[in-house]
Amino acid sequence: MDGHNVCVFAYGQTGTGKTFTMDGTNEQLGIIPRALEELFRQVSMDGSSSFTFSMSMLEVYMGNVRDLLAPRQSSRPHENMTKCNLNIQTDPKGLVEIEGLSEVQISDCAKAKWWYNKGRRFRSTSWTNVNEASSRSHCLTRISIFRRGDTSEAKSETSKLWMVDLGGSERLLKT
Image (cartoon, rainbow, N blue to C red; front, side):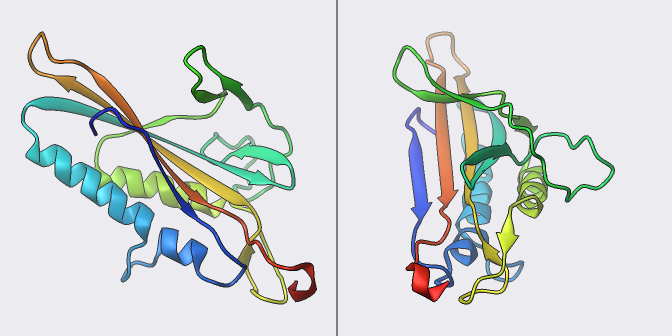
């Protein structure tokens, strides 16, 4: 929340609990829901600044980059999207930006979790010999945090928290 960028990765073989670690359940929250709760808890304790949050989600699946929060054109929400309008660029400061990636404003933790769960439903999954409903994609969730100080000399900061659930890294014989 102080202008630094952070990235958290879950990496390992299929079936070792990467997605569970990141998502958790309603009873046992994973890293992403816990991080969302903590961000909003921290904001409620900081009276010297005002904060704005936004969220984006994308997946990389079989060489394609898909926006998981993009509005769906079809009446069938789980229909695969074939067209990708995302363009990965590096800005003049050397930071990576994804042009065309949907970014939704999140005003509270409940809204953040709602958007996160919506994006999760569009992830690509398939059966493997290791896991019946394996996440077959890399899922990247970005929380952008904009902080503005209440005084005129206070500096505005932008932080980005990336939380990445990588697809399984297993030997071919196991799958």
